[in-house]
Image (tube, rainbow, N blue to C red; front, side, top):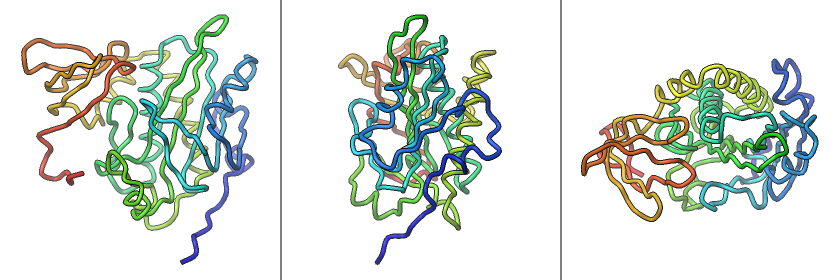
Length: 276
């Protein structure tokens, strides 16, 4: 069976009626690159490139968290990297803002419940539909960040079955009756990022509350690996600086920063949640 062809990414289509000033003031689209994040970093020497958005139809070496690779066939996903050169609120709050923006962008287009799995996964129906990778470097006046966002768009379930992924995955099209327009998706993602970053600058608590409202782990029993040790307990919140807040089984409350922690197990799942 011949592969379906989808509308390619187009800068003019994305910029049409784009309601943002900072994010997306310059848009670059690459047919293929090793990593859209790497392209964004190439532009980080000029402060005027703040807000640059790089999109790639295909990445040959897309990065994920903890050295994982982001897999997406050519033209099947939305692979975006956003360069930020004037952000002083830290990587964790930036990740939360990006997660809130990505979740809202996807929720508008699918018939499944979209949730955030701390720190950087977006789920639809308890399957991963998007991921976020925030990278940073020291700049002359402030840290420089690149926010990488990957959204599964057109992949069919057979692709995820063949990929043998660590966690179950899904795509936007699997929750719609018609293929999603990736140019429209990209435009809305840019607008949502601009909005959430502005909100986070004004009051970080608003972003935290937005993320907690759709967090998939709140109240769940988790096992977290931190500095080569494992801790079990119940998730009771998220702090934009300290990370995941857990009531430990052994007693006491601990916080686990995103950059040094990973969730290795979630237990006591509700009956409505499908098994991985």
